[in-house]
Image (cartoon, rainbow, N blue to C red):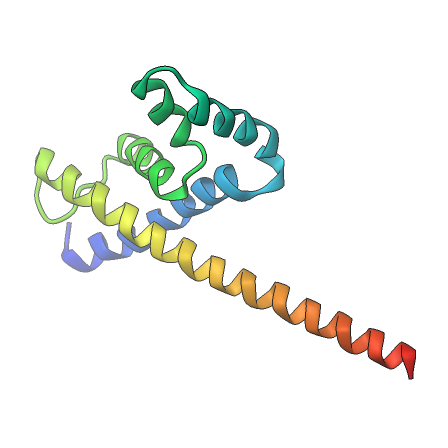
Length: 128
């Protein structure tokens, strides 16, 4: 596969990885399971138990597992045609997905900030 196509796939496959990792680790729809996992990773008796449950609360950690799932699903390899191509692809996908999640987090902060500013301006207008 030509390098341009490989890079295209890299940036496209990172989108659902970022989406799934962000949704599971941040959004309200998964709040209860995330709170359960958070409690288990804080009180787990073994290191393996704590690490297992922590991965459902950390978007960076969880994105590794989602990337492995997508690698198995698509067979995507980057640069090399062997296990090394999967390894390079996996870490590259995680990195790009985490860039996407960081950008989304910053965008979301700006939106929340703007909503608060608009609300404060509306309250000032109502007072006057």
